[in-house]
Length: 225
Ligand SMILES: O=C(CO)[C@H](O)[C@H](O)COP(=O)(O)O
Image 1 (cartoon, protein in one colour):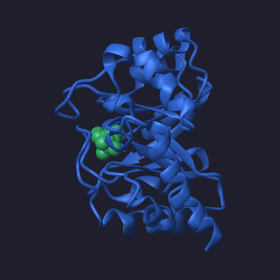
Image 2 (spheres, rainbow, N blue to C red):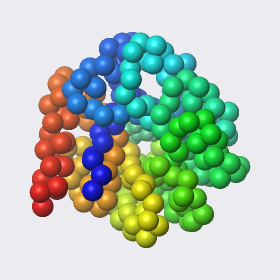
Image 3 (cartoon, helix red, strand yellow):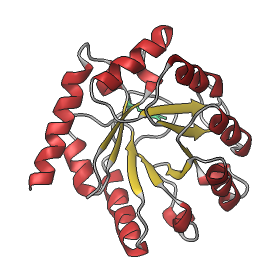
């Protein structure tokens, strides 16, 4: 089993004090900083671009930055986020004209590539690209907004992805995003996820370390089972 990674989504952070807030959540035990990039075209919301990623790197954030592109098209922003200091970059297959080329672009730019699946996006997009993937991100809400409810049928999708990954023999992380909380993280891990994006569950609390510790305790129970 891979080490579990907790990736707070800065969508729910304090934008007026972003550097400090990211520092605080990392000091509280987070592993990865998750960036929800929305273009008001592929999804009905608008967030932030590569300048914010670059600003966080200049501020001194050294943790992996996990960029989730909810944009269409994807290639231009892949290049810009890679240049801005991204570590992992994922995109939605239906938003790319040439999926293999976009994945290769991420690799060529020195980042780790992932594909993202909305709740109703079929998994067949994985068929011919498993050899290129570092992670597969399963959306457990429809993309666009934080604070939504976890869609329970997503657990079956995570199980199906886990099976595909095992059958492929490749070392690919399974990431989950949307409605992840202390009370469902263990079930999500049981289904096969090993990287957990959580926005509102963490940033809505005064004590980030308390929530992250509770999440880790839930995950530790799974490792012992
Ligand atoms: O990417 C998203 C929406 O597009 C996610 O839902 C968001 O990153 C996580 O938010 P929350 O933990 O509050 O559900």
